Image (cartoon, rainbow, N blue to C red; front, side, top):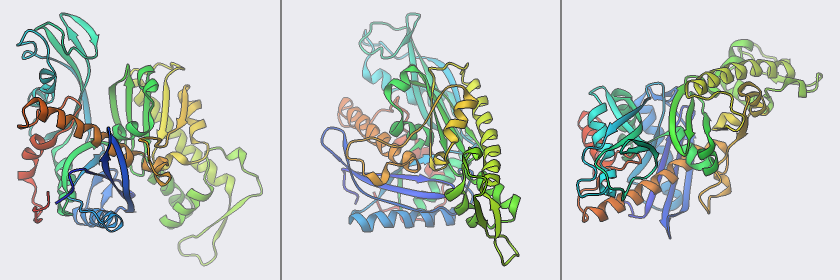
Amino acid sequence: MQDNGLLTAIDVGTSKISTILGRKVGAGQIEFLAHSMVPSRGVRKGNVADVRATHEAVRQSVDDVRRQSGKTVASAYVGVTGGHVDFENLWRSMSWAGAHGFITAHDLSRIQTEVDAAVVGDNRRMIHTLAREYSVDGYSGIRNPEGMHSKDVRVGAHVVTGSADAVDTLVGSVEQAGIRVAGLVLQPLASSEATLTQSEREGGAAIVDLGCGTTDIVVFKGGAVTYSAAIPVGGYQFTNDICLTYGTPFQAAEDVKLRYASTEPYTVRTDEDVMLDVDGQRAPLRLPRRDLCLLMRERAHELSRLVLIKLREAGFDGDPDFSVVITGGSATMPGLDQLMHRTLGTRVRVGAPDRPPGLPESLRSPAHSTGVGIMVWALKQERELAEARRMNGAGEPGASSGGSMFARFFKRVRPVLQTGQDDTAS
């Protein structure tokens, strides 16, 4: 039986599976107990392609944190990404609001359920319903209408859904490892929780999460999410370019990329060479480092242009006050932030987790943004659940407008999962 105060985050990525275990302490704080990162097997471009390989990697990562902490891990919040994820900005009438003469917190808690019923079909799964703003008596731009007297209330929501097949396969892979999925979190949204400042959210910002298989984007305006997207290009493509160009084994190409790559070739000395192992040759290839960096620069230019296209879809018009925060394991390539700054024409910085208080130094790197962000998100959802139980007299919790799925979502998902696991853990 998992301790009630424990929180677990699992980041199921294309190159790695990361698990973080913490305990809720004090007023909304987390004590970090253990974390583990193992190679990911079975995930392609953010999607589970091999269930067995994925659940074995998840099990290994979870077992690592169990050994480190001596704690039982029975449930976790899990990150989700991939090209199957889609979004829609919509308005819905809150016909139930104001029945008591004014709008209550319970009225607002029904948003997830009502929008879910109107939007999700048999082939889609709800991931988040994020309230952007409210309209009361025709006046829009209201952030929180609680306590207002009106029956003419509408909510503008950012709705994120995923393919039923992809979501069910992800959930099944984790649950076959013996871990109950408490909720799913869109990975770039999680990363934003760990890296974006509130002033950036208010003034307009995008989190660009550069993973191995995908680059994920979430855009904020006025403090709310207005756009999300996934680009099927990530760190894998940078490494694969080296493999295809020079005939280098993938791991050797990855090692060279991490040690020597840059998107700014003209900062590299012309006489500096790197050695590359080549398939079918005993002697390594001597390659000018500048040539390697030119190759990386071309791929970075392509990715930056794809990001710009997505930001323009989100309404970005070159505003120099707009902020772009790049994070994820591939964001640390030297020069990438400067190249994106030149392409996007706005402020760009590399983001690493700097919250919550007590975050270990070992987790303060862009590669851990999603995992740490899932923990922050999970803590918020647990608080919302506790508040929902309090409002409902400790009965069935109401759905959260913050976007968690919890029991209602998984009652719908679990019957189609053929996991074959012993589901006694809780």
